[in-house]
Length: 123
Image 1: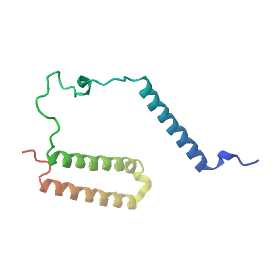
Image 2: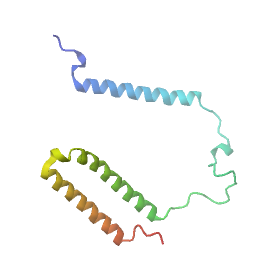
Image 3: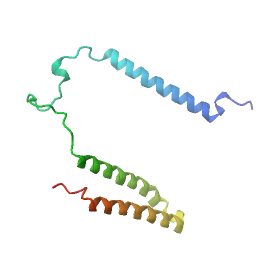
Image 4: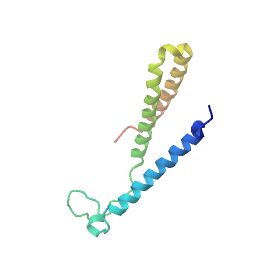
């Protein structure tokens, strides 16, 4: 049997990437073409509750919000690692168990550090 042009995985990936990029470009252009054309001052204001804004809404957030967000992301990613480990727990054996315990110990050290630095205190 003669090899096909699409037998190479790289060619398949490139065709898929070009097709996906083309679809994205098409839909972005379509929404720009069909969407509203005129922007008024009222439409550009953020909708809050219908009450007129008296002060500038762009003031800096306290750093605690960013620290809590980073902690959330770290522990959310940790859960993403725990699910596959729990599914394959029996197949991984003692090496998988020890490696996950080291991973969890590192995370607990990070949590201990965050608690000691009072990142989670809101007072």
